[in-house]
Image (cartoon, rainbow, N blue to C red):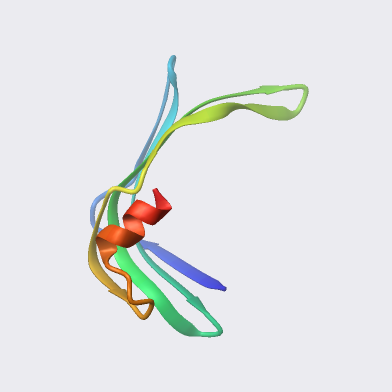
Length: 90
């Protein structure tokens, strides 16, 4: 399996607040195997929010929100639409 990702024009952001930690990513990703590309898309607004802490060197907590954002420039050799792929992964 090979995965490549690159930041796109829209900045990705992160935040730390009293209610937890968050990140919003805007990436162009390609996923494949043995050098063949199976899926490629520009993914805008991937969001993850978590409440994390550490205790004696161990990280504890939970991810309470994760969304895949919107996809454009979608291409695949898997015969699955962007909407179906997003629904299956979400």
